[in-house]
Length: 65
Image (tube, rainbow, N blue to C red; front, side):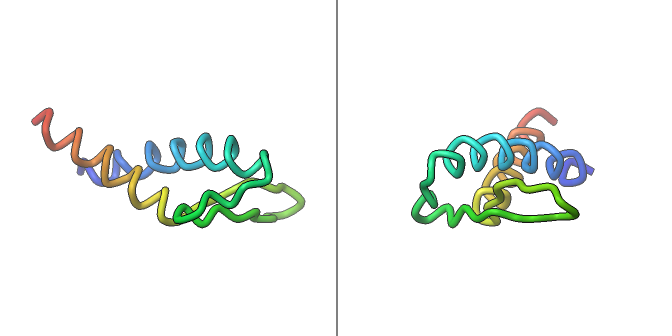
Protein backbone atom coordinates (compact mmCIF):
# COMPACT_ATOMS: atom_id res chain seq x y z
CA UNK A 1 0.00 0.00 0.00
CA UNK A 2 2.90 2.34 0.72
CA UNK A 3 4.16 1.95 -2.86
CA UNK A 4 0.82 3.18 -4.22
CA UNK A 5 1.09 6.24 -1.99
CA UNK A 6 4.73 6.82 -2.94
CA UNK A 7 4.19 6.94 -6.73
CA UNK A 8 2.41 10.35 -6.80
CA UNK A 9 5.02 11.79 -4.44
CA UNK A 10 7.78 10.55 -6.73
CA UNK A 11 6.00 12.12 -9.71
CA UNK A 12 5.64 15.46 -7.94
CA UNK A 13 9.31 15.45 -6.96
CA UNK A 14 10.30 14.57 -10.53
CA UNK A 15 8.17 17.32 -12.06
CA UNK A 16 9.57 19.98 -9.72
CA UNK A 17 13.24 19.01 -10.07
CA UNK A 18 13.06 18.29 -13.81
CA UNK A 19 11.26 21.58 -14.45
CA UNK A 20 13.90 23.48 -12.51
CA UNK A 21 16.87 21.83 -14.21
CA UNK A 22 15.36 21.33 -17.68
CA UNK A 23 14.08 24.88 -18.08
CA UNK A 24 17.64 26.15 -17.58
CA UNK A 25 18.77 24.23 -20.66
CA UNK A 26 20.59 21.43 -18.84
CA UNK A 27 19.94 17.71 -19.29
CA UNK A 28 20.96 16.91 -15.73
CA UNK A 29 23.73 14.45 -16.61
CA UNK A 30 22.78 11.09 -15.09
CA UNK A 31 19.21 12.29 -14.49
CA UNK A 32 18.56 12.19 -18.27
CA UNK A 33 15.95 14.95 -18.22
CA UNK A 34 14.01 15.28 -21.46
CA UNK A 35 11.07 17.29 -22.76
CA UNK A 36 7.75 15.48 -23.20
CA UNK A 37 4.91 16.73 -25.40
CA UNK A 38 1.52 15.34 -24.50
CA UNK A 39 -1.55 16.78 -26.28
CA UNK A 40 -0.11 20.28 -26.72
CA UNK A 41 1.24 20.28 -23.16
CA UNK A 42 5.01 20.27 -22.67
CA UNK A 43 6.75 19.26 -19.48
CA UNK A 44 10.16 17.98 -18.38
CA UNK A 45 10.56 14.39 -17.18
CA UNK A 46 13.26 12.01 -15.93
CA UNK A 47 12.74 8.29 -15.40
CA UNK A 48 15.81 7.83 -13.15
CA UNK A 49 14.64 10.72 -10.98
CA UNK A 50 11.11 9.30 -10.84
CA UNK A 51 12.35 5.88 -9.74
CA UNK A 52 14.68 7.41 -7.16
CA UNK A 53 12.03 9.78 -5.80
CA UNK A 54 9.48 6.98 -5.55
CA UNK A 55 12.00 4.73 -3.79
CA UNK A 56 12.84 7.53 -1.36
CA UNK A 57 9.17 8.22 -0.55
CA UNK A 58 8.50 4.48 -0.22
CA UNK A 59 11.42 4.05 2.15
CA UNK A 60 10.30 6.94 4.33
CA UNK A 61 6.77 5.54 4.51
CA UNK A 62 8.09 2.10 5.43
CA UNK A 63 10.18 3.64 8.22
CA UNK A 64 7.07 5.31 9.65
CA UNK A 65 5.23 2.01 10.14
